[in-house]
Image (cartoon, rainbow, N blue to C red; front, side, top):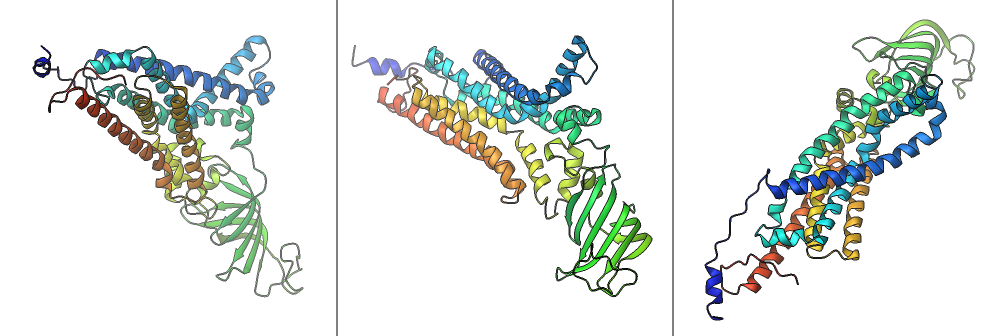
Length: 421
């Protein structure tokens, strides 16, 4: 009887296991993923909203009048407007934690062993994570690229909250220093659009970087379709000899015969994008997609080089970031938590997820500050996580086949039962 056992095993025909988007296993795991991701995201969102609301609670409470109902409505509406901008940055990490939570429960309940003993390989268990990737990638991109900027536009229009007041486009901003290819500009900005410059002083530099001209005006408007600006009610000084009274305020190093000349209107070339001026001071995550795309095509200024292009590439990468975080959590769980959930392995997986989350923020900062090409900043982490997932699954499959070969010494025989060593 013992001698014929391998032959009997060899005659067993195992059922073919294929990807099944609507299978019971897929539905069960996908429901678990979605439930746990939602719970983790809700906790993180509650913490973020509390921290965000606390310093401006008094400001928000009276935004729609007095009375208990008005106060409750004001707070709830403000929280709803803040939700897209606060949940989008943490959704990929919440996805990682939710998938890991589900996988730990899957192992501890013995369900993973039951599934693998049915003949389903680890790679064939990926369909729930793939479907989750499609769902959450779309959600992440929609929140960060569209709903977040639209919600901030409402806050800015109503001057609602600290950020709404800070970014209000209807007021004339404080004096700002702006570097342009032709020189240095000090001005107050009426954002428009179209933008209008108030109380401006333009220091024009020559090819050697030396001061060549100073223009001071009450207001300046762009001449449509050109890089020329029409200044009104001002004075100018050039490095050549002028006339009138000297003005050491604007030319402290000039001699007495070099003077400021008054003018009613004067045309000056300013290589400054009016669209960029109208969004001056706004963080890139608050810009609508059409504006972001337009600014990314002209994002070459010395102070903003790479800022908008990096943001655009990061948004495109976010279509895949939650999915790669989910795949990483699933693959590491199958690799390290196949039969048990030792604390050291769980902590190691958590650390890997946190490093991936921190890596996305580091790449964003380095790309926006010119230390990394925008396309690398946007795609480095998703591509690296996908590569780590592929490597983990290769190890899992190699280990699984080795276990099968050990239990079935005859070549070509594969046992339907996995060892629990």
